[in-house]
Image (cartoon, rainbow, N blue to C red; front, side, top):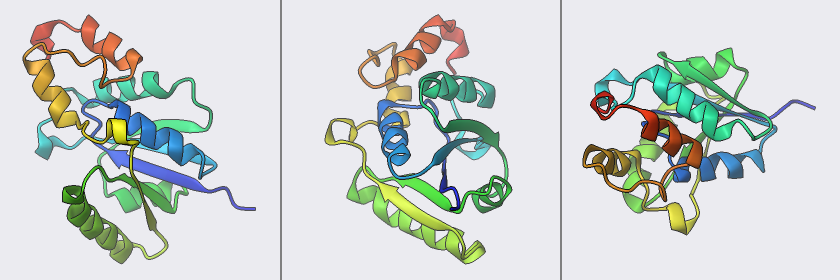
Length: 164
């Protein structure tokens, strides 16, 4: 039997409780989940790629069958390198759907062996986005209810001048 390996790509700037919820739920469906942290310079992330990888690794370290990698190539190329033929994408609201649908079709047009599975976070996490968290962080707002505790601890230990 072939192992079902799912790739969950994103910027994870930073990883939130919503992302974590998707990872946990994906583990119930697939044998292995690889969280792929994109360099994503076009989005001008608040945290460096290394910081985002570290935060993500800390958040998932207690989960079995989860791996974290960084990447700077096409998602379908990374999936092929890692023997993953399933992409996980999160949907919070109807506003996410059109973009995610286009992305799913694009990835499938590049490699028709790639399937995209859309998962919704639990309702209590549906409003959380990395951009909302970054906004709060830029004003030293409370984020502990939005982030995995390991991520909150890492961010809290950073000097405020490192938060760009």
